[in-house]
Length: 125
Image 1 (cartoon, rainbow, N blue to C red):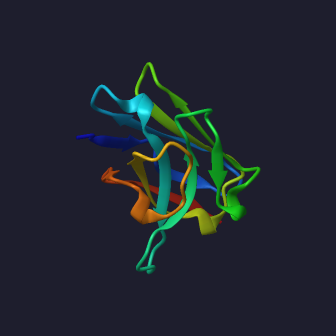
Image 2 (cartoon, rainbow, N blue to C red):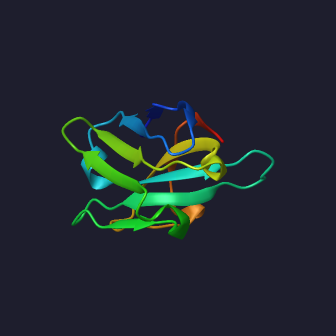
Image 3 (tube, rainbow, N blue to C red):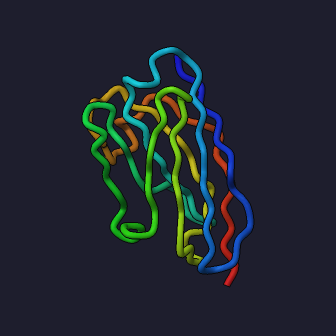
């Protein structure tokens, strides 16, 4: 069992930056692929944002965030980060951290086994 707790969300102006953190409980954090998803206002489904694998540290990103967002992990601290730069109003969403038993970055929501409660990110224009 893995429990995930996100933090770092908030209100920021367009062009600004935020860093989200997700702390995982459990002793096997280093063997999980970690991902970030988001659900925008009025949208029924969340969308994949970024993922980082536990073998080789490979990463995957949503096309619209490439070059602006960076996912990283600190296995000693059992924490995954999402550095978000050059934020846009369309990045406004609740951001969720998720953990997958897959060894490589995966983008499908169904590939993830554990989810956090989410943290709100609001980007004003």
